[in-house]
Length: 184
Image (cartoon, rainbow, N blue to C red; front, side, top):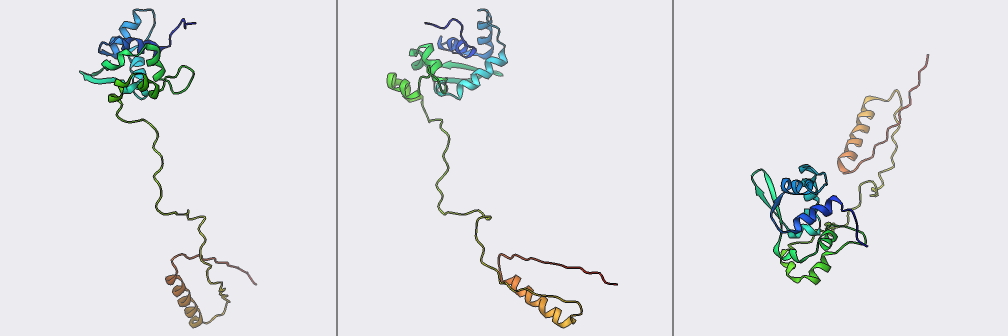
């Protein structure tokens, strides 16, 4: 059972599989003559998407003036339009994988430069924990009480001690509780 109506992607692929070098404008003109309405921008968008799929390994893209000229490599002309469309699919029953294409047509291997897989994270050399989960060394649990009426010398000594504690620690948690009481 063959499909009666082709998608726009399939139509563009069929045009490319004819083997002639074509610009987006050329493809749009050929397609519009066959009763399908596609403009140059739509064809250009489809070509950009096709270049990012497995089929993109076998499409050459050359600058021609202000446009790009697309052509299927000679070795890929042995693919059927259905196989070519299958290479452009990411999932589905009609998907034709790059591995299958290379197995059935080994001469295509020279055009596959690199696989287009997502990069995995590089292995870490050191295990670093986020700052929130790191346990800090327990700070000295000294509570300093300041009462009104303290003499200035004892206050200065207390502040000097506090500055020495601050200068010695790299991580410091300071909690200040202030109680204000008004009296008449």
